[in-house]
Length: 166
Ligand SMILES: *[C@@H]1O[C@H](CO)[C@@H](O)[C@H](O)[C@H]1NC(C)=O
Ligand SMILES: *[C@@H]1O[C@H](CO)[C@@H](O)[C@H](O)[C@H]1NC(C)=O
Ligand SMILES: [Ca+2]
Image (cartoon, rainbow, N blue to C red; front, side, top):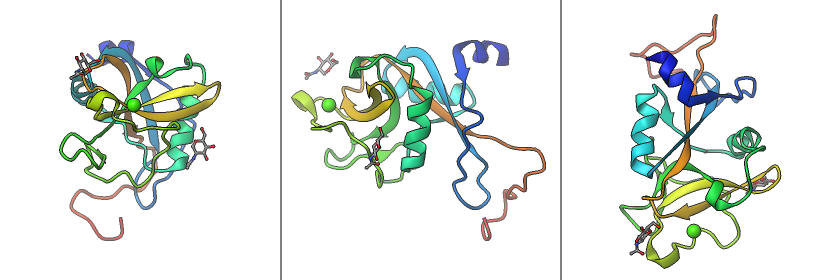
């Protein structure tokens, strides 16, 4: 099973590490080249044992930018990230964590909700080494990004039943 998963999923960027404060271990982004609609892709990250990718800071945006720097330029070569505005057309939120979109880095003129039919977000290379965000129809089949938090040896981790000091 694990072997099967690893065949489909490219694990990259294990060296680029971002601490998101407190006890959270370093975050790693994972590319899946399987093409699917937004909601299917969301579930598939989970089936791989990962979380659907979210980008909360410019540091994380840059991590993803580095990960995708060799990909083709253009929105048709983009990757789902898991924010949507399906519930409330006026505000995007991250579907997994429920957080608002406090950070974003949209391409010029985006999100444009083109033909009133775009409620899901992607990232795509706008030029060599530069990445931007865009809204697209959720049903489009695209590759996507997952994420996970690496557990390092000797790293202090929060106990499940401890909330303070984390
Ligand atoms: C957006 O991303 C570019 C890199 O592609 C970066 O230079 C720029 O500072 C970012 N903008 C914001 C508002 O984070
Ligand atoms: C919305 O976009 C999808 C994917 O391109 C397309 O199949 C569908 O027909 C569009 N719906 C409308 C109402 O434009
Ligand atoms: Ca758009």
